[in-house]
Structure formats: structure tokens, C-alpha cells
Image 1: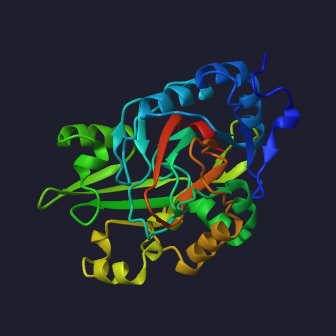
Image 2 (image 1 turned 90 degrees about the horizontal axis):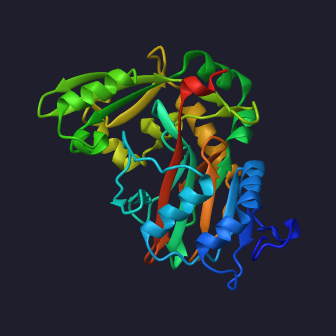
Length: 326
């Protein structure tokens, strides 16, 4: 029996286009409701790549982690090789990226700068912001097709070189790799085809070349999947960029190049960022919302906000570029 979800007609669509299902308040516990409706929830998620479940009364990170694992049907992943500050919580979940409230987090596929990344994400809203704070999403398939062919081909042929410097100007390597052992860092880098260089003052530089696109394992579609536009120094606001330029280009906390080491035209990256902006899908969080997202098909970001905001995130389904090559 499908408690609280009698038929497919009860699946609704927000004005933004996001598909959602609302839990009936009389349908028992969250775990029971998920169990009763799991086939339908998963079929809708597979079809659309994004699904919003509303009015799920979860009161802790542990409850969210269990609910997300139940929906996805897999254990949750640890957040390793980090690029943003987050707090690990009970249940295998994390706080959403802890950047300043007045800043925008650009669209990105989670961990697309890494050799290993999650296939699925879950976000749970415990406290919606008073104003703003949405988690906009964007269809990566649309981005692929809207990028001019000449630009797209250049990225696909050359790949992307990610250069990171770990110091006090960004996350230290101890936080990124979740260890204080240089040996552990080197082992991780070796296993993931990352070159590394230890620098004075306990600093570290890494370089890694990764593809710009993937092929979705279910649909066979080619998808734009990288963080060149986000890691490149041109993504920073002018004040921050001016301050960091004093470090010298080779010492910037993070930057991207083509895989052959040549520079990426900033105008091309601006075009890509603008495409994400033009195509992003926006909805307002409500307390008790749980959004599941196909991390291969969709990017996500964060709008600036005012007031308290608490959104948790969990990740599942480790994939590698070698699994999704053309």
C-alpha cells in the first residue's frame, strides 16, 4: 500500500519545474512512509533526476542520514578531498558549505574537481532562511548543449588542469585530506593520479588533470561535468582577486587551466557562468523539505541569505571518471 501517496496524480510540480511529493501528516513515521512509497519515489527520481519530498519531520542529522540512505538504498559517503568548509555530523551527513551569508555559491556538480565523486546527493532543510538562501539547481545536459561547440570541443580535447595551493589563504591540507600525516596525503594523491609538491611553511601544491564531460550511465547522454568555471581565479570578486594576485599566479589557492597547461580564456568561463545563471531553477526551502539530486545530471549552488539557515547534505554512490568515459 502507498500511504499518503495514492497515485501518480499526487506528484506535483512547482512553478520552477521541480517535481515534489508531500507526505501526508497521517501516514505514520517517515521511515514507514518512505518504505510504503519507495518504488514510486525512486521511479520519479530516476525519471527527473531531482525530487523534492515535503513535510518530512526529521529532527536530527542522524534521522536525515537514515532517511536518505533508505531512499537511495546505499550507505552514505564521507566528504574527502574537500574544497569547502563543512562540519561532519552524526548519521554520515554534513552541514552545507559554510560560506558567508552574503555570498553566492556558484553552480557546481559536487566534487567534479576530484577523480571520485558522488552520484547522488540529499539536502534537508531544518531551518529555512528568513530571506533568500535557496539551493538553485541546473540541468548539466542543457549547459553542455548551450556552450558553443568550439569552446566545448576545446575543453573536451584538452581536459582541465586543477591547481591547488593549501595554506592559510584557503583550506589547509590537513582539513582537505582529513589527516595530519603527509604520508597519507601522498598515498591518496598517488591513488588518484594527483601530482604533489611540498612547499616551505608546511604548504602543499597539487595538480590534477580531469575530463570536462562525462556520459551518464543510465541515459547515455554527454554531460558538462567539471568545476573549471568555479576554481578559476576569474570566479572571485575583484577585491579578493586583487589581494590574491600579490601571491603570484603559481601560488593562488586554486586555479584552472587546460589540460596541456595553457590558459583558459576568461571570456569563455564568463559565458559558462552566465549559462548557469540563465538556466538555474529556483525554489524556496520549507522546513521539512528533503531534496534528492542526481549529481551527474544537476548542479547546485546557494543564494545569499538573511537570518538563520540550516541545511544538511548527504552523499552516496561513489563514481569515477573512468566509470563514465565516452
